Image (cartoon, rainbow, N blue to C red; front, side):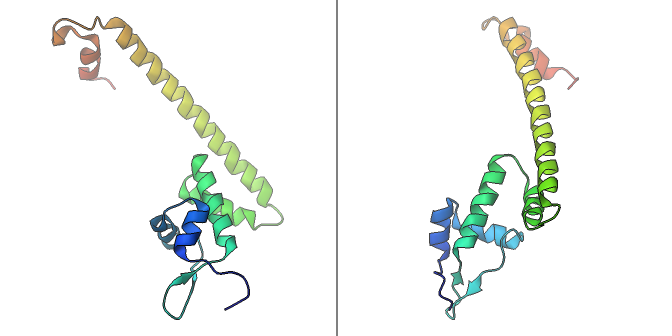
Amino acid sequence: MNTQASLTIGRIAQSAGVAIDTIRFYEREGLLPAPRRRPSGYREYDQATVSRLRFIRRAKDLGFTLDEIRELLALSADRHGGVEGVRERAAARLLAIDERIAELQRVRDGLSDLVDACPGHGAPEDCPILKALAEPKA
């Protein structure tokens, strides 16, 4: 064993703020390198894995998909063009978020109109909300 402190999967999960199953999943998905194994078969991690897990978690919090995170991790190792690639991926994610916000605002405005139009009493067949939901158009 090397002189660098080794961590168990439970310790690394706690340090990174993720579940043990999440770590195993990221290993299967190739986002984390396969860990060293002790003679007993237990996984053995180092502090770099905690940093990588935090990177993955924060990227997920920003809306990046696992494939996009995989690309970001690869780009982070590219000493020449990596930063440009990271910026391009982040700009694309920002555009997708802006588009999603616009769509959610449109949905919110439509729902708000329906709520305002509904008196909240009377026959269900007269309810504008139920009528709108039953219409054939999307």
